[in-house]
Image (cartoon, rainbow, N blue to C red):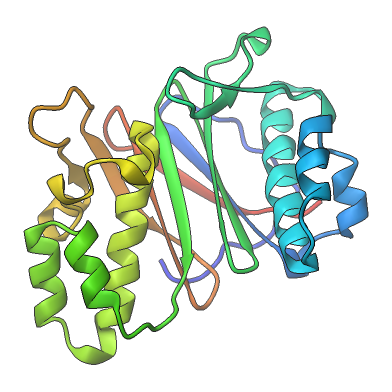
Length: 240
C-alpha cells in the first residue's frame, strides 16, 4: 500500500471493528490563519511559540485535522472538541464527551496522519525516509536482535527503507501502549512474522497489538498498531 487514497468529502460511519485513517498534507491545506481558528486557547498559545513558518503550518494542520475528524464523529463543531490526557499522559477525549472514541496523531515532513477507533487503544506513526550514515548505530540502541539481523542482511539499496518501515511499526506500538520513546524498545519485535501480531514485552502487562503498514505520500512510510485483534482499515485523504 504505497499510494495515498483520494480526497473525500464523506465521513464514513466508524464501526467497532474498524480503524479510520486520515492523511493530510500541508500543500493541500487551507491557510494557516484559517485553520488556527479551529484550535483552542492552549493550542493557539503553543502555536504562538513556534517561529518557523513550516513548523507553524504543520502544527496547525495536525491539530485542526484531529479536531475536524473527531468533530465529524461526535457531531459537534471542531472548536467544541475538548481534549484531555489519560493517566499515562496519552491524549484522549475529555470525559464530558462520554464517547468511546480513541485517537492518535503523527506528523512528519509536510504530512499528517490521524487514526481513530472505538474502544481500542491505537498508535499511528508516519516518517519521512531520509538517508543517514548512522542508521546502523541507531538500530543498535532501539531494535531487537532479529530486527538488527534483518537490517544486516538487507541489500544496501533497500536498507534505509527497511529501517524506517521497522521504526514506524515500532513507534506505532509504543504509542498504542502509551509508553512513549522511553518504552521497552529492544524487548519486542515488529519484523517478519511478528509484523501482523506484535507480542508485548515479556513480563509486562501490556496487551498484544495488531500492526500493519499504511498508505503514505511519496518519500514517507506509515504504520498503525491497535489492540483487540485485526481491524478493517478505512483510509481517507483529508481536505477542508
